[in-house]
Image 1 (cartoon, one colour):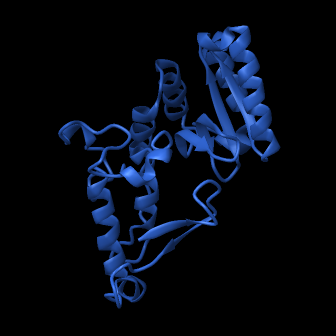
Image 2 (image 1 turned 90 degrees about the vertical axis):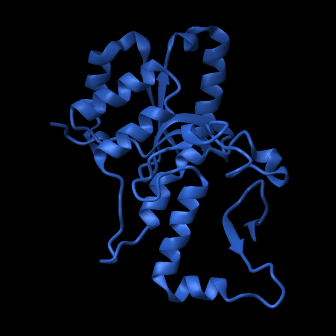
Length: 224
């Protein structure tokens, strides 16, 4: 079993414990036997509808097809309050980082794999265009797409976790006055929690985006 601590509203850590009476030694085995941990991660990938080796999303093969989550993977009656933020598609980069091969090296998503993963997470063609532009010019890809920042109670198009940068790809629907006010509120809240906002507006076009990317090499790298 697992419980979020100090509570499920503001989780800071996860407590795992054996629920069977007397215990079965499962947790001790995970600590002492690295291969047992590998087996656990592979099983987690299988249960969340991902290829156990590559992390590729195979949710479309599940019946019925699974998008962000289903009752055969992550959803349950006990976590109904969190169904709106549960998204199994965010898991492969984490699982692959934890998966240890025979040489005890950490396995990371390859650049192409990360691109494909990000593209599947995009909510619009505009977001896909932005990601493809980064990839085609050799810039650093973001860590996650459609990332929920719990403390700010908002979801961000793309994030660079270590730099704590939130990327916003604003399509035409962001031009309305009411939406702009909502965007300003959400981004001010992100800044309050230490995030840096970068906005790429649809009116700027790819050339305008390129200039902004080129002037922020500390985040995107120098490109090719």
